[in-house]
Image 1 (cartoon, rainbow, N blue to C red):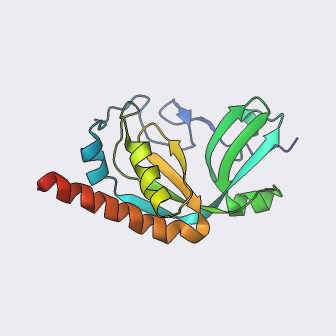
Image 2: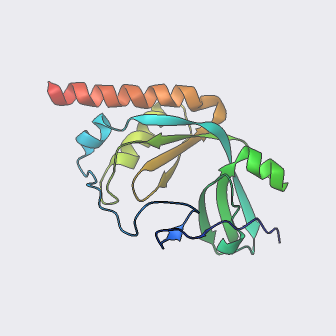
Image 3: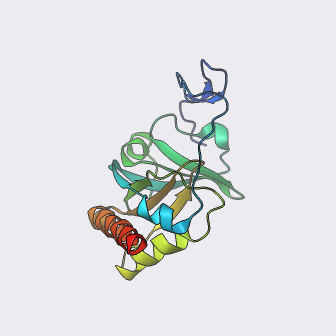
Length: 168
């Protein structure tokens, strides 16, 4: 089993998280549930790195890579995670294809209905594959690297159109 440099632990504020993190243990952010408001304010940001999906059979969360890990999920078969292509190459991990991550800057509620469907439908209508990730505060979309800039434009246009419809 591959073991990565484990860099997670208690921060200065005492919460479990990344080293040196200054976030308090608890946070209060007003998250949005209105689909129209969410679409108007998605403000997609295309992250600069290429990302890859990797899987380590039998691995557990204590095997997470310390640098470049975007997300992880424990599955019955082992640990699946998304990390920067550079980190995967450095660790000698195999992957199929590279992806760009669009991070939505709107604070979307985990209880909001329809956002994922609206975004993936719009990307589907433009022939772009989309893999969604929900974070506590933001949603993220991984698209094939070759489609990153086009996906950014599609989502910016969707947001603009939603705002125009709402003001009409």
